[in-house]
Image (cartoon, rainbow, N blue to C red; front, side):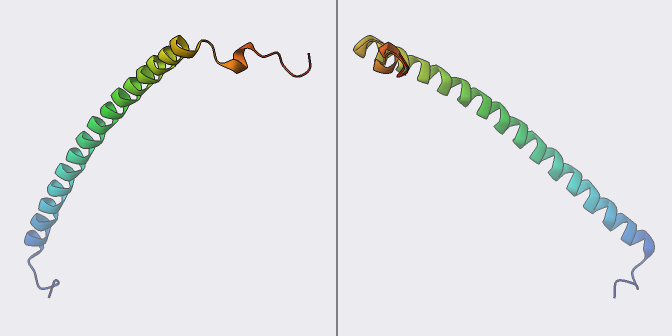
Length: 74
């Protein structure tokens, strides 16, 4: 029975659990911060690749046709 345990032992067990949970939270926080940095790096790389792709497309085809067309109200 849990009630029959020594109160000191219960306190020690709870302190052990708290220490374990604190370590787990710190590890998860570190992992999340690392993932966030990686996401930001990947977003920047994606933006650069998109910019390069647009530049290459422009060099091959010239400006996009819709850029040269007059709006319909003219």
